[in-house]
Image (cartoon, rainbow, N blue to C red; front, top):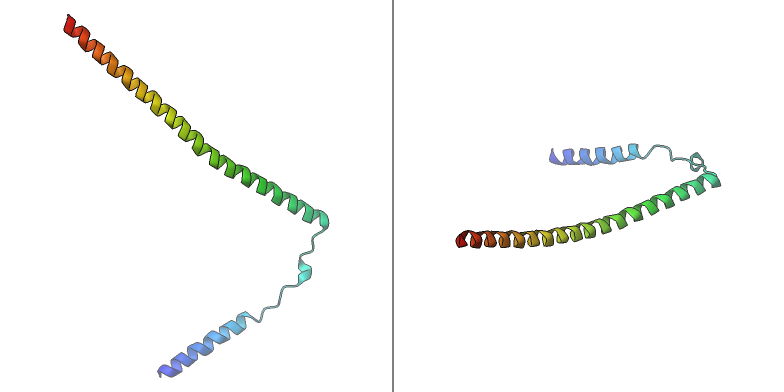
Length: 98
């Protein structure tokens, strides 16, 4: 019984593959493009490639600029902290003198 089931599955599998392969082959005459159409396609592909390169360059530059801006903001924040600490120290010393 087991052998019959396995044999029937194998036959069924090979039959479905054979049925799937019986379709007609596509003809080469279906796609005919003129030289101008091919030239337009090539120009469009070149424009797409150029835009992709520009996008990659932009993606490389933006993180660098953001990093520089964040570094500057950190420096400014540190300077503001120093000024705040100095103001608190001078206010504390001024209140002790009175």
